[in-house]
Image (tube, rainbow, N blue to C red):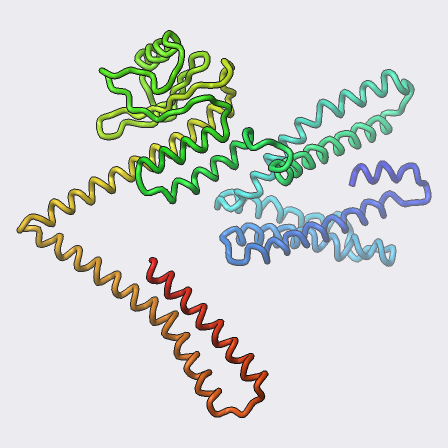
Length: 404
């Protein structure tokens, strides 16, 4: 609004007050429309309370000024209530914002505010520098108001450019950047892949495949290095390998911690069944990993460590149950297994009753109605085709139920 009012100074026929009031009215309409859209979007979400609070706070605070001063001045040239009285309603805003902050319902807006402050600070110095250079070398004799307007225009343009860059980074990153540098997508992909693995060997193969695809490496291996066996898992320089071993022995290892030595690197995955598991790799070039590469590798190694640990715990638990089952006095285990079986039977009965059985009842009624209806062959074929499609759907549901 301030920039628009400064622009209106060059047009003497336009009232600055009208420009300000029109801009304010347009801003309020846009803000309330966006909040209304958000209210509908978050209809079944807990964030609906935040959007609802913002909508009523801004709407109630701006309504007296817009209805009794802004619009009357723009339409008939006279106000109903003076601006000094109507603007007092804007004190509703800080009250509602304070309530939302105290009830911790302003989390999404707080992120947007921090984002804007970050971009605003980044844009401040370039705008000031360009304005200073313009006043110094291009037009030395310039009024302060014009320099201020130039500064604000450059400042806003810088902020919009940063927002545009962030938008294009999110939408075009997968097309413009090579897969080797897209670590965020890799973390999501490996997280989804680890859910489908069934044992420790599958987890290791999945991790090895992902690391080979993302990092520029020559060799890779998951090894359990014992104290008596310190041989390299693949061909490499013996001196460089021994230096890496000394580095690992000289400092405590934590999950995800990386140790580098020229072309070799090692990452501690975890200690499973009294044996340490390490990821050993050989880079194609003796260049240290960047910070984002180390963070990415540490993150996926941590995911793999948690997955393997949970798998081993489940295996140990199943073995313990098998041992208890063989004992004669394990009455509680027999009851536990019986209850589990009954629970699964009840679940299967409910699934069959709510899906396949209901569909069969509806299908039976359709077939009965066909028996007593007089219709043409085309209509008969159409209804039979519909029934056939429903039968195919029931077959698919039956297969899914059997698979589960």
